[in-house]
Image (tube, rainbow, N blue to C red):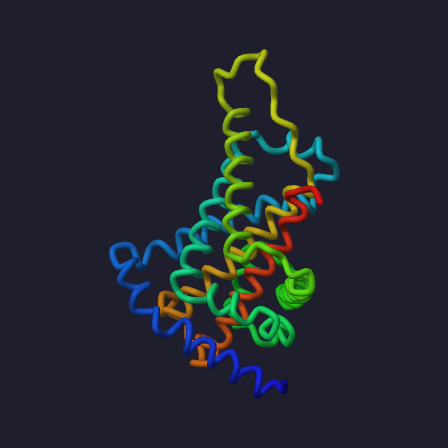
Length: 258
């Protein structure tokens, strides 16, 4: 498939799966339309900033808990959870998940960082990236690698089911941290196992993927008022949401300890 054929293919997917749903998504979010997308995008960005710090400056697991309170870590986990839930919901409502499920192999096989909108680099910079171009290429590479491996393995769960399972994993972790942070917790109560640097790294990937997905669904339905080309709002959004989903899924191994 040539570059021109690939862009035409993604445009076809957008017109078939996404455009017919744009009006419905706007109606469903009409009371908070201008507020919800930046709110949940901001949650994802804040959480990733914390997890980036842990990965860069906490040299062992113990330093995580001497640097951050359990309450602060719980807050970052909560931000990840809620932004992920919103990301999954709007990607489903807007038709991106249906497009991805039906054409996962074809979308992933030709995915490249050059297909992604410039808004993605801006999101990464806000998260603290010092080289957004390089990081975006890495995210695309790892997302593409994971998705191609997933296709070869013929997994029984759909992508949507996997995303819901990730929500539950994070929800359980949030409950553990909330319990540990309770000021009146009995001294005899057993503490939950400490999470590792690798675990927080995986959570950071999930937050990054949620942020990319939210930003590009917002771009596609016209919530982000950015001077972008029609191509960026159509096939560019498909490519970016695919990268976001792949980034979320590729972070799960670290969260599960695989």
